[in-house]
Each structure stands twice: as C-alpha cells, then as structure tokens.
Amino acid sequence: QSALTQPRSVSGSPGQSVTISCTGTSSDVGGYNYVSWYQQHPGKAPKLMIYDVNKRPSGVPDRFSGSKSGNTASLTISGLQAEDEADYYCCSYAGSSTVVFGGGTKLTVL
Amino acid sequence: QLQLQESGPGLVKPSETLSLTCTVSGGSISSSSYYWGWIRQPPGKGLEWIVNIYYSGSTYYNPSLKSRVTISVDTSKNQFSLKLNSVTAADTAVYYCARLGRSMVRGVILNAFDIWGQGTMVAVSS
Image (spheres, chains in turn green, blue):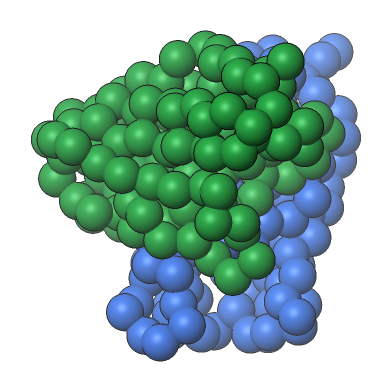
C-alpha cells in the first residue's frame, strides 16, 4: 500500500482556479469511486471537502469540485479565496476496508 | 452533534508502547454504519492511515504498521483505543481519531472520514 502521489505545492491568485492531482493505481483510485479530499489549516484537524470523487458535504462551497480519470483524481478550487490557503490531502478506498492517503499539497494563494 | 476526543500520554520512551484512547460523545460507537479509525501525522509531513475498527471488534490495518498495532473497542464506555508497540522517534506525530462511513445508508458518507478529533501530539523521546 503506497501513498498516493500529489504535487508538493500549487499556487494561484485570488479569483483564479487551481487543480490538484492525486495519482494512484488500479488497486485504489482507479478501482473505486471512493476518493475523498481533505483541507487542513495549520494546527487544525483535517476537514472533509469532497467524497465519492465529486460530492460535497453540506456546508462546503460549490467552488470545490472533484473528478477522476483512470488512476488519477483531481480537486479543483475555483474563485480562489485567501481562506483556501491550506494543505490538501486526497484519500482513496483501497479494498478490504482499508484506505490510503496522498502525500499532501500545499496551496498558496498569492 | 457527534464529537471525538483523543487522550493519552504526550511523551513515550523509545521501545515502549504508545497508548491512546478516543472517546465518542453525542452518538453511539455501536452504530452499524461506521468504522472508527486512527490516522497520524508526523511534524511537517502528511497523513498516514493506521487502522480501523468496527464496534463488533472487526479490525482493518495498514499493512506497514500491522505488526506493531493493536486496536480495541469498549462499547460500554463509547471508546476505542490504539496501542503501538516498540516505538521509535519515527512514531512522533499528531494522532487523530476519526469516523469512517461503512454502509450505504441515507446520510452516511461511505469510505470517507467525515468527523475528526482535534488530534493529540505524541513525542517519542528518552
């Protein structure tokens, strides 16, 4: 079970859109439609932002969206805001009631 | 509103056993819709899933940690606990407990951690 691959950092200006990728294998991302994304601000617990590849929990702005193609999932944040600056982690179901996280991506709002 | 709270020693000596407890409040740990899990985060690094447990006692481990991990559940206290033995400095991390949906029931978010504890820092040092 290897960690999913994410870019270490991405950046964008307020109002722009950014996309964070998350690459796994056919045993995790590619094999199931159970990819979730978490936002983590410094010193805080992670917060669920996307589940089932592209669904948003109640209260998450529709600026956040998810998608998947093959073994790669993506999180897109449109209309960037200063408060979106945080670390983002993807997570995938990997079978047999196990999960695997990505290495995390630091989003900087310029 | 369901909440999770981690508790346990903040300092553990190398080669000893790390022990943490997660207390669930505002809901029952005996729900058939959820697993309960532990995730950790070394300082400045990413999240690592450790283990999940179902209220019946069924367990699911990260293969890389399985040999050192024990998880248990106490439904009478609405708690579940983690033990990690033979710790080294590499086990220094913030440890989180969280809820993971396991059934396709209305209102349950399947295979995602939807509620997290605040986390507890555990340092391994002599």
